[in-house]
Image (cartoon, rainbow, N blue to C red; front, top):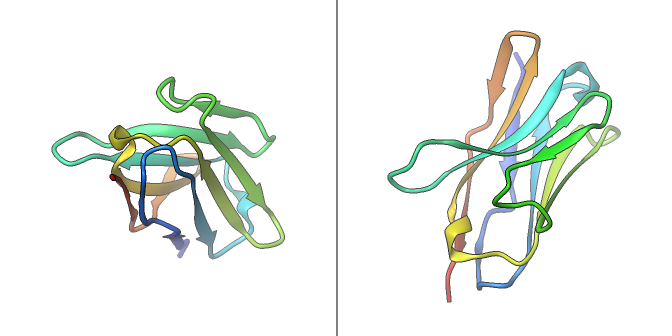
Length: 115
C-alpha cells in the first residue's frame, strides 16, 4: 500500500517562505507523476504543481514564479518550495501520486499566510 505523508505546513507572514515535504513509502520514480494540490476553505481542491517521472514540471498560473516543485529520489521525498507567500495561498496542501490510473493522496498539511 502506497503511503504519502506531508509535512512542513505552518503559519507564515505575507511575503514569507515555506517548504513542504511529501515522504513516500516507495521509490518515487515508480510514479508517473507527483503533484501538489491545495484546498482553501469553502473551495474545491485545486492543482498547484506537477513533476513527471522524466522531470518535466508544470505550475498553476497563480503560483508560477513563486513556487518550485522538486524531488529527492534517495530520500523518496517530494518538495514544494513556496516563496512570496500571499494570504490567498492559505489552504490545506495535499501530495498526490499516480501509477497509471491508480491514484494516491496524502492526508494534507495546513499552510496559513497571515500577519
